[in-house]
Length: 395
Ligand SMILES: Nc1ncnc2c1ncn2[C@@H]1O[C@H](COP(=O)(O)OP(=O)(O)OP(=O)(O)O)[C@@H](O)[C@H]1O
Image (cartoon, rainbow, N blue to C red; front, side):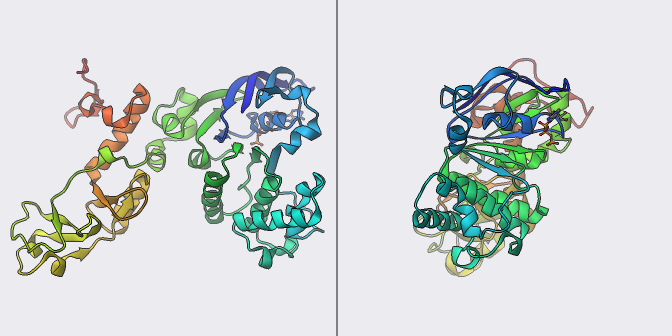
């Protein structure tokens, strides 16, 4: 959808902001450009809507060389969201959001209907906020209007420059989550600039880590965190990249253990053969759990089962799993189907969580599915000497 081919930008004062850049963003993909201040992220982005012209190389949008397209026509296909939002102070929220459709010649009523629809989509009630002026909104609400306005004419491409930069961390996380939900519905092709590695790995389908004017590594967040390509990237993603990686690594079915299971209507078995068992209803849905001690009582399982609060749907992140364990002081969590209907799939223990993380790092390095990783062949730290060991031969 967007393709950079050997693009270089030199400013008249001799600064090379971007040096021989080549990469591609697929249709419907969200790519984050991340790196320290001054490394060329904004320059990269502004070349896509021709606010800045490259010195060398070519940029293609949908196969078309953008240097041959009239900039005004080009920008109609590209939504643009910036940190300062840039709302018109003398126009209401609804009028601000309807700006682009009206510029495109839509009838006023149609443009306003579309604007109301978009405000709703970004979580603002048009009947409450539509007639307010920007100064009557909170910072987070203004950012949402900025996103709504950029989407109003339904452009296939969205450029976002630090879109959530001007708000506090709590609002920022909420806006990020809302944006991810929105993106799963509208599936725009998005280039998003940020200097925050956490934001980059949270939002990006892939991330481009910038050094000075160059991309040092381009890949899926988990791959970049798991195997930084250069010492610079390792340094930039941080010493706690293992922790960050937890947040982008989903729980998979192969990570789960099959614990002892009893049914709600069963009579208590007296001996569980384990310290606890999971309790399911007749359909196989998660109901709760029961301890070995309770199993020795009389009556049915249903009369003694305890509620299970520590559970997550499949596909939740390992970080959520870890934090759920801590929150409920649980030695394991139950995992149900990804659709959240309640169908029980298995349990995740701390040992399995650790294995899942090690597997996912090795799976990315070898480019194979996680379930195919042979844990025995992964480097381990031995207690005896603290040295990294990797068996010479793989089975
Ligand atoms: N108009 C200009 N003339 C000369 N140099 C410029 C111009 N605009 C940007 N630069 C320089 O180009 C380099 C890249 O700038 P750019 O704005 O693309 O960086 P960035 O990664 O987006 O930084 P930030 O995160 O601080 O916004 C910087 O060294 C900057 O000083």
